[in-house]
Amino acid sequence: MDYNHGVASELIKQNIARLLADLPEGVELVAAAKARSPQEVLEAVQAGIRIIGENYVKDAKEARELVGKRVKWHFIGTLQKHNVRKTALEIFDMIESVDSLEIASEIDKKCAQIGKVMPVLIEVNSGREPQKSGALPEDAEQLVREMSVLGNIKVMGLMTVGPLFGNPEDSRPYFAETRRIFERIKGLKLPNVEMNYLSMGMTSSYQIALEEGANIIRIGTRIFGERD
Image (tube, rainbow, N blue to C red; front, top):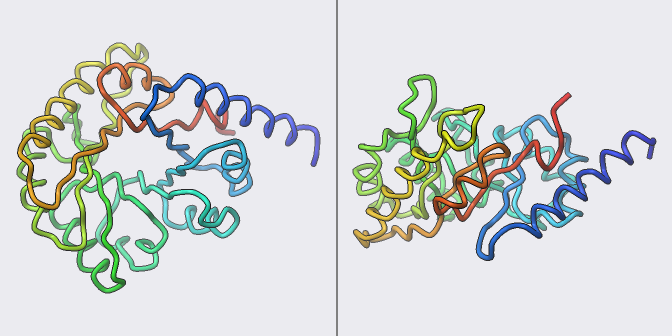
């Protein structure tokens, strides 16, 4: 191990220890591994991470070959219909970014072929940003209703990214609105819908997200450092 790699590895270990020590009970930490090497992912797991979030199927496959099944794998990127393949669905334990009935139906169909029920979160475009994926806040409840009849999907909650601001406090209204939608859908007690998870907040905004009810946070930079 060269010196620079050793320093980076130790920083990952220290960063994770601090995060885990500070998190409230019941909050799950997802290491957002976009553009990180399989070795970095392995070091995060060795330091105590139990959920890896990947944006790309190829990256998840490569990291999983090194890390194995000792952790849970969440898909947190933009999912398109042509990417819903059986091999991808075999890798992931949860998909956090379902935003349409078309995508949900494709996941349901492919999961039926491999005998799997896939836990999913509905991605909400809380900032109503045209360049971002996610169901609009006003459409989320109807989407969950439509998905509740699918036999090989289980809706487990909501996810949002929200607009990115220099001041994390500016994210609060978007997290608060997503929490209100979450609570409203949870109160409907729909079949095949559990609404256990609210995934909100990244490195810059996770503390605000926690205050607004997040119980999954997705952290990349604060774990791995700035990307090269």
